Length: 209
Image (cartoon, rainbow, N blue to C red; front, side, top):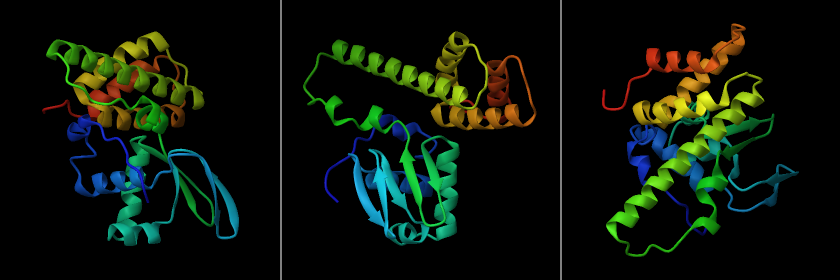
């Protein structure tokens, strides 16, 4: 395979990076994902793949990674729970989708690095951080709407910024998944945002603790 991918420096502080096997599998997903839409023939079936998607077979991929199929599948399920990727399976194969592929891997947004004045560089960094928080907030809003969970969007956006700062993206993603599943299973109504952050505070540690 040819080409390259973008890898953000903030990955160094992510929960995925702290786990060797998980980080290895995540990088594999990024490297396997298609950069443009294409059609392939798989087991005599035509499959249309969008940017950020690839065909996943745990036995074939486990050979690439030199990892037990059961171990690989466990890591993939964890990445799905953290909303790094989505996995759609049928009786023949699975299609993995790297979530937010266009946001982070869009080649049109790639700019040549130039020497900058430190103050200008700091300003650009602040803008990038704000943009990433906005993207995360929009992604969360869409996820809750898809799952028919009512929430106050303005309140959620404000709490997301604090949650990202205090707990990190990985822990916040896990808490969102846990809270959403519990909310739907137990038939809660009312303030989902408050319930989400109670779940976060109760089950996850702040950064540095």
